[in-house]
Image (tube, rainbow, N blue to C red):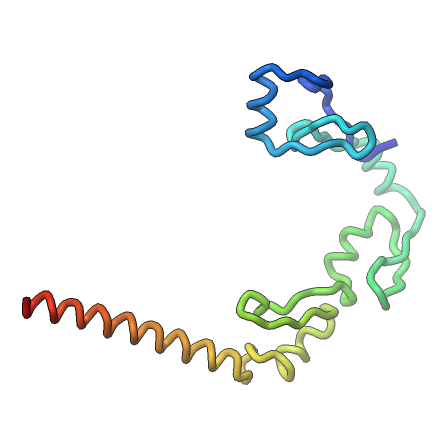
Length: 152
């Protein structure tokens, strides 16, 4: 059984009429890895009976994150993964340039001791200083433009 069933409406192989082509261009389509038929997000439906069987199951699965080894009922794996301290994460300052990736449980010590962008790190200070200089430069440039317009 599959957890997701495709809704086969409007899905025919080798049908190149204009209506089907425009629909697949508007809805990001993908191909089934099994039968290679095109489908969109709108074609996917949750198999509620299978979902209930999974949730009611007493079978367990080991958490997939290295170091955890917690046995979880298969229907509760998603909830466990959301709170698992072994899940790998990027630093919240990754967009600013921090390259750290590690376990969720290690984030507090990373922010306190390692992260350049943490409250005491040089990265945050350098970032603020660069921003301040950029704003000052932009303001100086605007003031100079206004002066030249007033004098001209």
